[in-house]
Length: 415
Image (cartoon, rainbow, N blue to C red):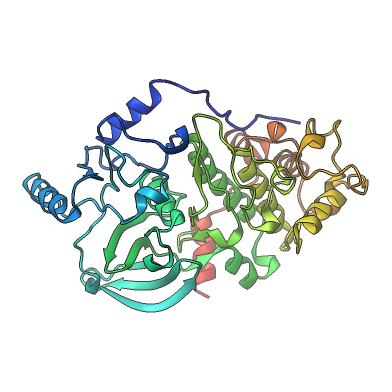
């Protein structure tokens, strides 16, 4: 059943750190907390050039003036932004040697150039606005992050989102256009997309989300996920609400606040990630060692939801979520999932359910689609298909006429 496995976590490489530091234009000898570098925390310059880095040991005002002069001489606007407290949030000591920076941020951009149109969302660390660039008329999404919510300054989720999106440039990943700061607020400027997959499904009758459009959306989702995984990034929070849809029908991954770069050495992660309905069983059972396979499970849940128009496993607690999975896929055992009994939250007293056929779960999906769904929802992470292998699955090479997502989406938006 398996067409491929998730990319393996790499083994430690002594040349890795020096290579990455050279690519970022930062001096060697950077102090890493807990002995674990994170490949996504300090991004390389998206334009290919080396960015000057603001030293942690130099007074901010003097360093900023010096860097501003250096950048202006080089024909570059602004100064790389070094957030207050970000060293601690990244796990670096306040007096750590070396330097870090967020390439391409605009410290001196005037927020008055944007006119807020409406509030479109609110989260733990701030508010998202639809806004308009007064000069160009371009619509953007302004994510305002309140810096006074944490004593350490910038929330770690914001740092992850900024640094990872600086590296992840792909048609199926939302674009981070700029980073600005003013007083005690940090603004992330994103391309504006007015719809997400959840709203799209809720507002579209079942008859108007045909299977060929589901196939197109799934393919685009897998392309974005594959790009993340090939760049050693786990999203960790894939769900319909975090999949934005452009007016031309492009699916784009968004909200990288929980994303993690993975690499060397193999490390443990918190299991309090991923919205419950899309959470992989290894996380629910307390595993702290996981990789790209957790995203693949989420993709499988989203695939089934697009087909049936209802959540596959809508649990209201962790144990309810587990039991909903077990009732559908059967209670896992060492035979079906080697090593499951060793996971921290596994109980031998779990009820024993038998597996249902996918014909009952997704009756409208053909054999090739059910086979792909089966591989996306394998219990054992090592047996779960990879995003790259899923893109090559026979489900996407069927002879039916491929959908035109541009036309489908425009018809929906223009109704």
